[in-house]
Length: 198
Image 1 (cartoon, rainbow, N blue to C red):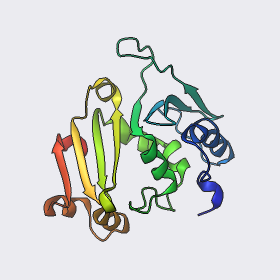
Image 2 (cartoon, one colour; image 1 turned 30 degrees about the vertical axis):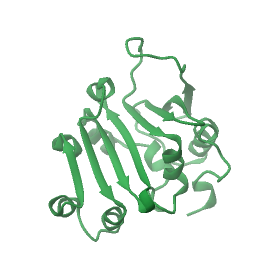
Image 3 (cartoon, one colour; image 1 turned 45 degrees about the horizontal axis):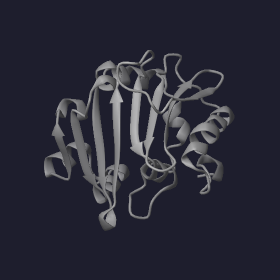
Image 4 (cartoon, rainbow, N blue to C red; image 1 turned 90 degrees about the horizontal axis):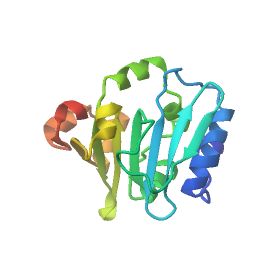
């Protein structure tokens, strides 16, 4: 993995979103599907904020949102809405000794930003809000709340929660087990709408 494939350790969450991501996008060869959705990123806690990210053929446009926004005043809904605390967002990009590799070296940031037509077709079939929780070592817990489509974006809370431990994440990533094995053995737990989670 080359040093430029991830932000530096001194970059704040705001610097990553507003400067590093657009720069990495401009330097990359990949470009997104013309139908790529706007992604809203909401980071809570110290150094957080809220932004809309829109990937086009030319650039990754990032616009900050006013902190006082409330439901009912929305005019342009995103296609995907990610909610996370700032420390978990930074762990996703930098790693954390108490968590498995959340973005393995073979998966670059551009793979997440540049969604191709096949991935778009899959995303268009998802319409709901779910939460993913990873139980790390020494009581570390990582979480991401993600909403897809109109129903997910407008939902007041997740319809489904997926919980998994670090060892299971590593085994799934390496191919040692498949999702159905993890689910049947109880190593991967789903609460709420299983159809949405799967």
